[in-house]
Image: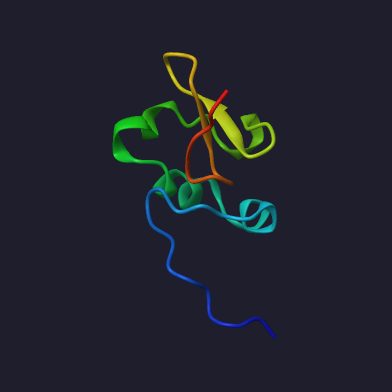
Length: 68
């Protein structure tokens, strides 16, 4: 049996397992409002990341922008 889930908020870092378990709607809520429109859906993410309009990369595993 699973323990209680932690409360995830915008900018929260998640694990690869959590990424797989969460729906598109739940993942979208982890992205800050200013960038939510750029979230393409889970299937379009590579390694828990997606590109923003300016080419920067948002990482769910980091809970923020990925340094390149």
